Length: 194
Image (cartoon, rainbow, N blue to C red; front, side, top):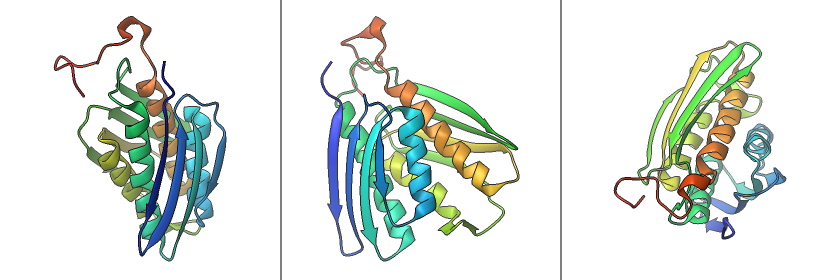
């Protein structure tokens, strides 16, 4: 198997982002975005997806930092997976966290689409605007060219809702990017292309 790695940089007038990804990692992470709660959520993706992820991001506005990190991490997954030969492709994760139950279902099928239903009760979770969780997922899905459906099925604590969603994303990504030995060298599509 080839090394499924990518390095993505994005420098605009609003942000400076660098993402390093190893899909076949061990869960090592080094993440600094200037938004502590967002860092905590991205660490969940690395740890529970067993991906090695390094992210450094700076910018003057939370919205642009979260959006651009989502775009870059999505692009990194797309680049690292290449033509997606042998991957499982579709996966889902149902994750409990105390009072919360979160669902992510995804398809790494070459088309970016997101359906996000995350009812947060407060404007902020720690210092991060709660609506940016949805914005991250939309940005990530569009650049990764995958379908993501995210839904909070139960819960009251906004921190738990966000963390369960990021853990669900991690587990679903881990499963979907896994190599299925039964189809090694083949594409998981009747079109023979993703």
